[in-house]
Image (cartoon, rainbow, N blue to C red):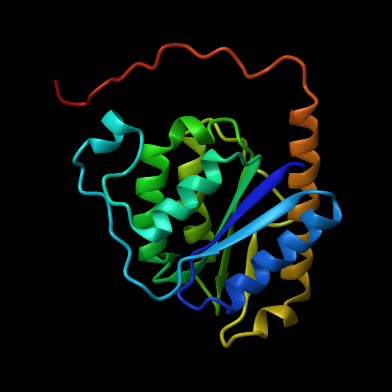
Amino acid sequence: MAKVLLINGSPRRQGNTFLALSEVAKTLQQEGIETEIISIGPKAVQGCIACGMCGREGRCTFRDDLYMQVMHSIRNGIDGLVVGSPVYYGGPNGSLCALLDRVFYSLGSDLKFKPAASVVVCRRGGASAAFDRLNKYFTILNMPVVSSQYWNMVYGQTPGQAAQDEEGMQTMRTLGRNMAWMIKKLNVGEDGHPEQEQPLRTNFIR
């Protein structure tokens, strides 16, 4: 059975971000896709220190429980990824970005060509900027970005308010169906992945 990992980037494990991701997960399950939600929670998350260990060992030098849980889920085999975050100052939660910096740099080869989507939740403004920031992780790794009927935004402040955003929750359900459709199409494909050129690097200062 295909599986999608959903990362809840909110310090509130049962808040509005969880509610939005749960709507996506429920729809994926209805489409025959297994789901797993991993929540960051309130603990501090170590950021990348540019030590280069991941390039040598294939994993981050920091073996905190959160990173290891995400790594094991990815390496045990996922077919898609959804990342959700509350909006802080027009961007994603800093703890989530600290985790994603390490995950995407150390596990990039495991995530390549996996369909992905981001979900953002806010009280009022900043959603589109946070949404764009999260999508940057996917588009640098050849990951197809799954869209919905609108940008993947849900509005709410206190826990549970997101359920009142009818359009936002419908957008989550549409996202779940679209991701399930893309995963199924990719899994039955016979052509494999596109041929890749050897990456080139052009520095602005030489």
